[in-house]
Image (cartoon, rainbow, N blue to C red):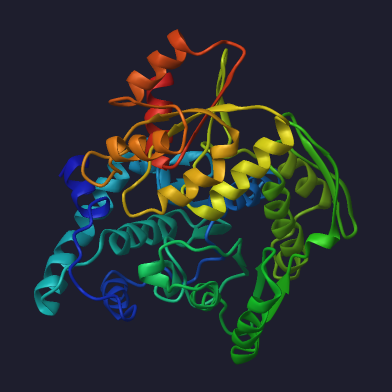
Amino acid sequence: MDMDKVIQYINTNRGNGQKESLNRLFKLLDRVGNPHKNLNYIHITGTNGKGSTSALFYSVLKEANLTVGIFTSPHLEKVNERIRLNDDMIADEDYIRIVEKIEPVILELEEEMSENFYAFELLTTVAFLYFQEKQPDLVLLEAGIGGRLDSTNVIEESLVSVITSIGLDHMKTLGNTKEEIIYEKAQILKENDRLVVGPVEDRLKPIVRQRAEAVNGLATFIRKEDIIIHETTLEQQVFDYKDWKNVTLSMVGTHQIENACLVLEAFNTLNARGIFISKEAVLKGLKKAHWPGRFEKVLDEPLFYMDGAHNEAGVKRLVETLEETFPDNKFHFVVGMMQDKEYEVMLDQVQHLAKEFILVSPDPYRGFDVDAVAEMLRGKGHQAIIKSDMADVLTYIENEISKEDTVIQFGSLYLVGDVKRLIK
């Protein structure tokens, strides 16, 4: 077996069964020795901010000299990014070895059930097996979509669980309202466990509290009024949260302050449950934390930032960041989105900041129709040009855009990966 065969298993949507329970995955895990058991987890879900929050947690845990397993999605450049031990991605040979180990079981179960596993189910199984071998002090486990039926929700308990934010995304799977979505995500809270929730509307909190009461758990909510921001620039942000004073972040955007508060709120729970972290490690770790593709600068002349915002809530955060850090500026927006996204709504969110739109499809089959989108934008009085791929976009930026201007790319993490490969 080689990595191409591995990717057929864990990076291709091969499933054909309804996801009405986690029973299918439980069967697979049982036959490969239940590798998800007997590990310490921080379980993270949310509409936006999962990756950034994972990065903040990891930086703190690393500063405390702990060994950390990390499971995140999606990847930017290669699928190995999704499973890491500290700073090291899973090696190709480990990926191949583990997939070879489970392939006979996969084929046997698929024949028994007359349905195929979804790629994310298999990817999660590989991650559990890898972490079982490595036995890290703690695993940062990021949900793919939702919570209740997400493959990561097979774990029996976590040291602390986190809901970063709630917005309208993946509605075919999770529901059409925020109430339905937060219900799905709150199901990661297990018996007697602790859940920390980022700032959400008051009307959503009773749904979380009902889940906490049902499992004898405890839910804590981050309140914006408990955050005092002293400084927010492109270089750093400084804030207070409750008794934490002058906390410094290098990550840009006030939403990252809210993500950092999730880590601060989880601090006492982790220490009470045997993961001992000093306050000094927390402060140093938060300051050092970074996460690729989240308002990441890739060029200086012109300034070029790429951001993974790909839903309404994410674009709203991006707009807030731009208005805070570049007051009165207009931007060249490089935009590529999947056709199943509410791209017209998201483009409307940024139009008051646009100097021009540079459109590129992130995927030849699932990407939006760049010609139709360009026509729509021109009909609203905007300048819109079409490029064939990100290499063409970078050539245009280099040759046609003033060195004093600012370029912002958003709409798809696929494009972030393309940019990073090309810049290298």
